Image (tube, rainbow, N blue to C red; front, side, top):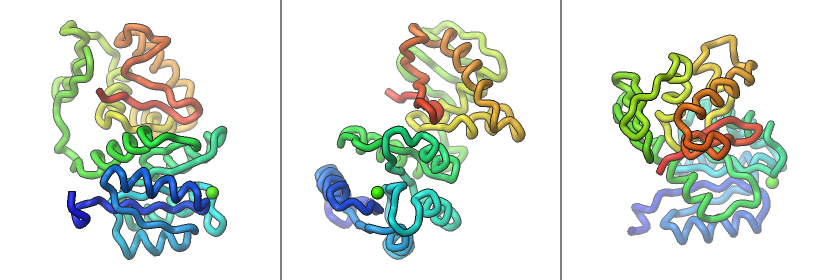
Length: 232
Ligand code: CA
């Protein structure tokens, strides 16, 4: 890959050792890197450098990362992954609801980082309506055009809500969705605070499509945040 082709990742992080780690990890995977140590600099570079991806720490000295997310989303749809400290689930949820694409909890490994970047990048290049009508992962087959679901070739009977929950997650494999997002998509406006609906229907759905609902292959729980459909 020539330098001109390397996608530019903007890292907005006030801790120098983490910036260094990210720079080395990203460079070794073929990314170019721009760095900002404050939210203000980060927003300026996001506008000037037009990065292909942004990695944003939520704990910044000047503008809170959540506020950076909101401001960035006023004019940019660049894929955005936020970094947060362990145990700050509410921060991640707020950032995802403000428009972040995904999150990583510190400390994280290079493999996890690169996997998340690839998912975020893939979803950024997909144009609405251009997605496949069939999704096949493992033994599961979702046909979005006929709204039918098959497990090892046998049709699985889902209720309309179960199907919508599965299809909403399956449309973007690998991408995390918050409880609020799923409630708004599947149940509609006014249900955003009814997280127990999601949990109830998720457990029904898992009993129908997972070999072991306690150790799901397809529908992963992101504790305190939401769910994601695992790709291959
Ligand atoms: Ca920080």
